[in-house]
Image 1: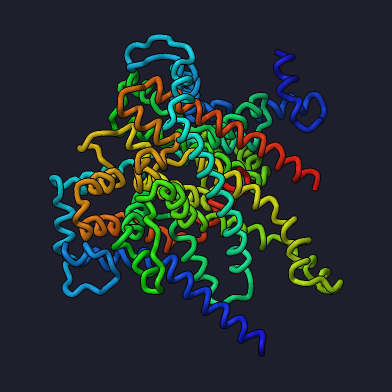
Image 2: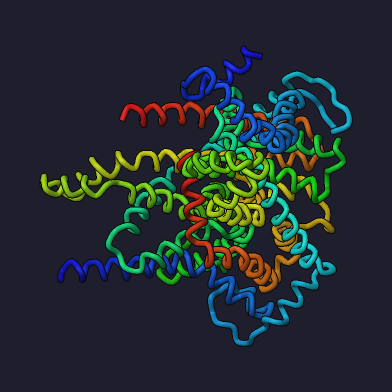
Length: 310
Length: 276
């Protein structure tokens, strides 16, 4: 009993022995640990168990009712079939493309919309609203706008005498076209994150820089950029995680086509699931898990370290 | 003076650019939603020569045996139930996590982080739902949505709990308040701003969710509004006016939320993001 109490107390600020005991008693009563139970139970049943089960079932041929252990066959198939390995490459390209663009554009728009510009409120609302619109709706909207002949984009380009590309119908361009729409929809979130970061920079720094005769560029380079680093890290992490998992926009706009040109891991997972290859589909999920972990975890580590070093 | 002119010019150019990039796509939807089939098939921004608002509305609602009506009912139930569940369950975690230093806090924090990063394993989740008899049921999907939303909500609640003074808890306890009353009658009312933020952000997320209903709630009688739009996409690929009308309809709820809760949404998304 005493052992339990003393370990529980370690984190509590030191006091007299008697006071400590009373305090831990009151803690146990006022902040009962069973408050974790509902969330913990849901998390265990619908998240932890499926995640652990996925490692096992990815090694099987599986029909939900029975399974046959086949070792790494699913992964071998995943890595050897061109369309499947292509989805891996597409996922990484898509994630880095959208993430990079959201950093650059989000930062630029964040700076613009915190400057002296007029109608700031309206501009902020305009750039942020797409974040809240249904992804499928956005997908349909832009599928029509990217229509090779009748679409709004290419008719507008034709007016100025440019023959627009075929966008979604062009295998070389399909993935990039979807990525552009993803950027259009997501840049608002990056912008508001940057705006929060920029506004939080103390005004004294800018005054000191002005007094020292720093120009606009060096003020940005030496003051704004380092001080909004947390915002940059957030945008990168969020958009990478989102980009590596992305499914709905791609599915609504191209369904992975033309051919397999814009397939990503998540769309392969869905296709294999639909085709009844549950083991292979789960292996795809595990591959996605590994890719996310391999990219996001080291990145987070380095970014945290950079933040501490600062 | 010169500076002011420059600001005006930059402002005007930015506004024009923003209107082209961010307003025109929505305008396209709006204009084409009230056109007839033939006019809308040109997919352009020309104003409609005749208005078919009521006609298109009726047709969209009647399609596939009033599927959109079913979908709206389903989506409403799903959103309300999931968000209610998330708020209660996550607020409880955030409350204890911030207030009490226990041995399992490290574990809880790790779980929250995992919930944000790890992509959910789809087919194994179906397998779990199947063995619980919850696959293809609305309650099953609600539980899944709550689970996937918990992490984000816990972060918000924990951050806000830190601003509620402990003395308040102590005063309540001295006055003889039990743990349940302490949480539900003293703390939860104080968390109201965060509760509003969580409700708004997660309602939009659940309402717009496409992937989870697609996997965990297949079947026409169970459709949600996002699935309905997706199904219409294949069925009405030549009737753009109806498709656009459908988009218009499902964009209205987020638009209303945005108009009233703009500040809470932005606060929620940036604070949750900064902590994540």
